[in-house]
Image (cartoon, rainbow, N blue to C red; front, side, top):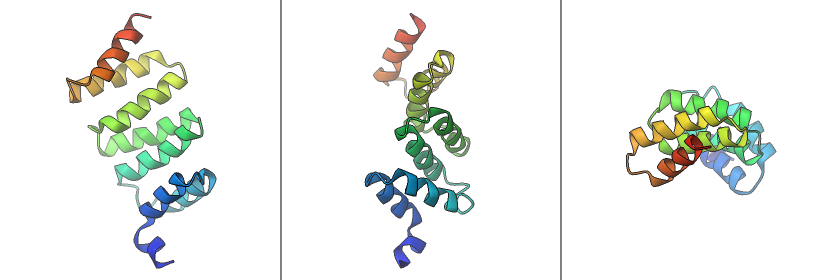
Length: 119
């Protein structure tokens, strides 16, 4: 049990990896104050909701992650996918533009942006 105290994010990743999403949510909620300034924690928390197809809540946590580390392309990509899931085209376009700003050679973002702007 000592490992849980010393490495709580590792335990959270393990729960996610094992598909224990409800348990992972409960555990993550218990850690919110401890990791309130940790962008990776908020990304993991958002990813759980993304897996569970609750894109609205996922976006909330991805935004918290981006508030702390606004240049994280992986978080922006997941946020883009959540917006697409909710059929929020304009928000997805903005995410793609931000990804391209950070990684001009990101062909995936370029392709998606082109597709979204031509629909």
